[in-house]
Length: 202
Image 1 (cartoon, rainbow, N blue to C red):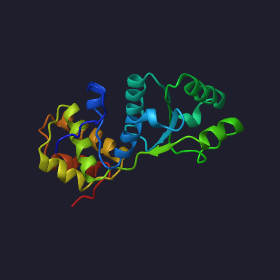
Image 2 (cartoon, rainbow, N blue to C red; image 1 turned 135 degrees about the vertical axis):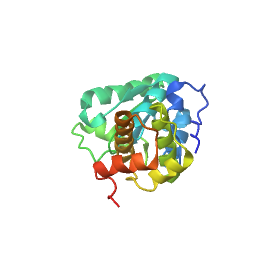
Image 3 (spheres, rainbow, N blue to C red; image 1 turned 180 degrees about the vertical axis):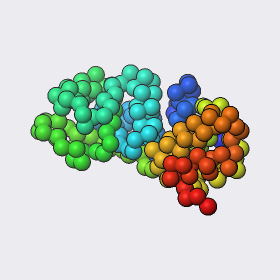
């Protein structure tokens, strides 16, 4: 399975080639591509850990000259409030990244709460089969473990369908391949994943 290109009207750079696009994040990509049409110059982006939300946030901020506030739940509310106001004054987009959108995280500052209530929200979902396969292929390739399509398919059908689960499985497989100095194979992957309880021994 080949990686899907990031469909933004910007020259492809290394970070962009590291971001896989599929149904789980297509709406987010479209929204960020058309930032000039936002009703306010800010958006809240939420999604699971390891979903690439910080990566696409960095790409977006670099390409647009905008501002990125990552892990917003842990940031000072006054700082986010002033960043929101500056984005409107300068007409430069602000991307606020969090695990979940407000009001899922408690905001004490009334002025910030009202501004975020008027701010568009987009979310990255957990990956479907095609996106999971693209991420697996990318992560294994980055580790020098160029996988055959049948190995990727075998893995997609057996691991937890989440970004964290995919990263955990690939880290475990990479460690097994390094320790055994062996070629990537179904037996190697099965043994590695059985050891951490991702799949049952059969």
